[in-house]
Image 1: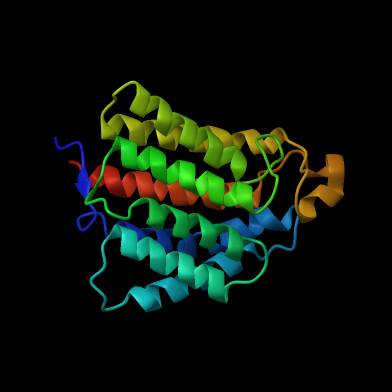
Image 2 (image 1 turned 30 degrees about the vertical axis):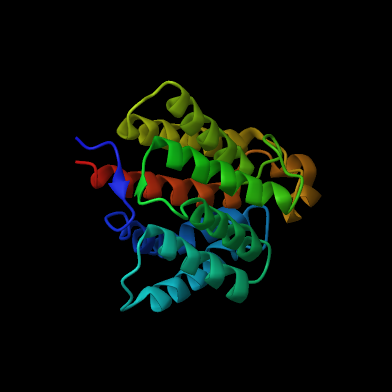
Length: 214
């Protein structure tokens, strides 16, 4: 089994992420409705439908596809998620500049850049009931895999597990950022919508890459 995937071979992962988000529209909005406006899934789906339109007919690799996602979300999606996810995908694209393939080192670098993009837009940290509760553990899992010289398939599995655990951890947290923070203790007991969409994106990314390793 190869331990790297060319950016060209990984290109289909981008529309797979878009379709996953669109398919999860109602689920994400239901989660958001418990503590927010209930439109997270609607806005995310709108953005990723635009992504699919802009990808249609183009022969792009993974880096270029991520750039399209970033540009689209930054320019066309309002609220907090447009800038957050737009910056996340833009930074991941930039990290792949000059690379021909995804390996464990590239994966760790991508997630570190993604985390940095979110951190630059605010001061959310693990424990604040945000997407950082998913993204930070995923980045840590990738870096741990790199340090241990693990295979790419092992690193992807670790990222999926860390992201899933991070999402579930938000259920017992009190929101400290965003609209949900106004609810105080009433925000405890439900998942965070941003964390849910982040887990979905990372899971779909990891699954898509894993499938192309087999």
